[in-house]
Image (cartoon, rainbow, N blue to C red):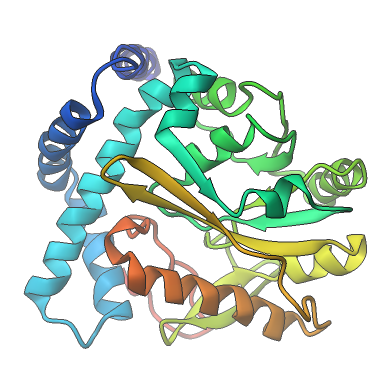
Amino acid sequence: MKTLNTLLAQFWIGVVKSLVHVPLSVRCGMAKGLAALLWWAIPKRRHVTMTNLALCFPEKTEAERRRIAKSTYVHLARAALDHGVLWAGSADDISRLVKFEGLENVTEAHGPLIIVAPHFAGLDAAGIAFNLHVRGVSLYQKQRNPAWDAAALAGRKRFSDPVLIEKGRGKHDLMEVIRAMRQNMPFYYLPDMDFGAKDAIFVPFFGVPAATLAMCGRLAKITRAKVCLCIAEMTPSGYTVHVSRPWDDYPTGDDTADTVRIVTELENWIRKLPDQYLWTHRRFKTRPEGEPSVY
């Protein structure tokens, strides 16, 4: 089965890379078909998506949440197909696809910098496009499928050969990040995954307690880093990556307050782009002690 999965992954990677010069309008059309297939083919992930939306948007009707969910699948499918450009396109191809607003907040930063990049559909597009301008550092989760892992890792290391640190070694991961940051490499940090209760605190995400790592504020304090928010918005013509000015009065030294700041900023952007967020992730997997699973 592993061999079959690897072969299927290699086939799909080849298909995606073959789309490198296919017009964006055609990829958008393909994404609608792919999204419809995935919506019906993976009921477990559809259930997670609809549960997340029900928890975060109880004021919306079931029909409204379903429309958001289906549109989310279209955005995620297009993001997958756009990897043909991200993985096989030239620097010029990627520059045409991905535009920045506020890039100077990264390229002209003095000293350590943390780029907080939540899981919107354009996350990978922003990360690879950043490589055209800076050499940074980030953590990555090794994929079970070796073909997926090799393709994703090679794609993320394009152009500037950023430092990518495999998760799973606890404090050793953090020490490598700090070492790179002290060489003025910006840290591309993904703040909104549920990695379990260890080292996490529960903060409200749309009013629902969510296990969230308090890493950003702690790391900013240790390294005296500035922190800015990065939102990768998918647009009809590609992507617009919004990079904020460095935050004032951050970190505060209060882990909860610093983590709530990130979650609040994220909520504000999700309300603007509700169908571009990664609702397929089990964001509320870890529950406070005594609470049943929401999934």
